[in-house]
Every structure is written in structure tokens, then in C-alpha cells.
Length: 232
Image (cartoon, rainbow, N blue to C red; front, side, top):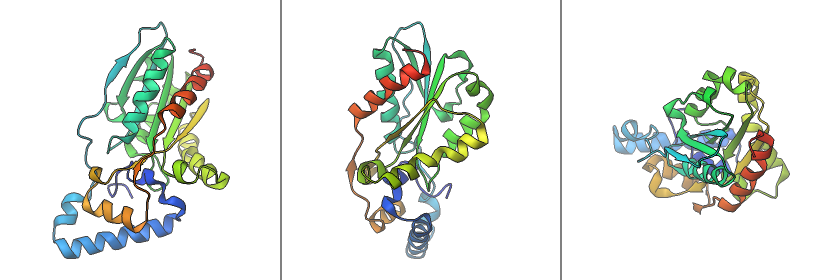
């Protein structure tokens, strides 16, 4: 479904829906908008760039950590920022950058990379960055994190959480990069961040509205991950 929805729009997680039903709903909404609005759908359906992607250096430690994120609406940028802040508090130098910047991981002691979910997959830019830098990533400790609204709505459902965790399995297999830690974080459903077709899909899926990111949980995970990355 590349080029159809925001990564963070699908961070709503399909809330227990099958991928087949999600695609069916998306297809019906796309046809409806195209018929009703002429060329409007073609002009607005593609993912929009976030108004301002986060790029920031934090901390002044001896060890350097690269935090990479894939996002469109900005949800995962906020998660990356919290990860970076926490690592800086642990005495590290941290660079937080979007995957679109194609940072070179070879100059860092460890890497943390993550993305929102779009139809059971990471956002394309984040996936491509991991694959393009697989050799460098395999030479240093790496942690992955995934943002998905299922974490907020179905956190008590072990099967659903395992499904979210498994979203990274194809990337791990293809890249050969084995993370030392894998974080699962809730995302958001902020209607103002999405185009009309995307909002129609969210409504059809009855996705819960709001920002469900738990910054304290993200910080706690990051502190634990820092030890496994060997930088704390």
C-alpha cells in the first residue's frame, strides 16, 4: 500500500482488523473519493511530508548513538525525540535524524532505528535505510522500535502484541540485522494530520482518536536498551 496512507495513519494499527479487510476498506474509500471528487483523490492520496522533520543533537558524552526514524505525520518523530533525550540523560551524545536524510551509521557506537506501521510494514524510508546500511548496522549494536496504535488498544492481547512485534521480522530476515532490543510503542490518530481519504479510512476502521504515545514508557524502554547497546 505504498503511496496510499501515512505510516503514522496506519499506526492506528488496524485495531484487530485483518490486512485483507483494511485493504478492502481503503480501496472502497479511494474509489468513492475519486468518483465524488474527480482528480482530487489523485492529488491528495499520496503521503505528505511532515511540516518539519526533527533533526537534533543532544548530550555531550563520549559514546555516540544515532537515532533514526521514519514518519509522515510526525508521530514517530516525537518518539525518536524522547529516545534521544533519554539517551542524552544517560550521558551519551545523540543524533536524531529522519531516515530520509540517509545518515551514515558508521561513525556511531550504536544505532536505534524505528518507524510507524503501514499495512503491517515499516515506513518505506526507514526500511530502505536499514537495507542500504545493513553492513554497517551488523557491525555495531542496534535496537529497533515500532509505533502502532494496537499497542494502546490491545496491549493486553498477547496475540496482537506478537503480531506487532513480528512486523519487523521480514526486515530482520532481509537485512540480516538482528536488534539487541525491540520496542513497541503506541502511536496516534490525529485527524488534522491526514488527508480526507485517510480520515475516511480511519473512520471506517473505527480507529480510536487521540495521541496514545506514552513518553514515560518510551524512556523506560530506552534506559533498558542503552545497557544492551553497550553504551550505558
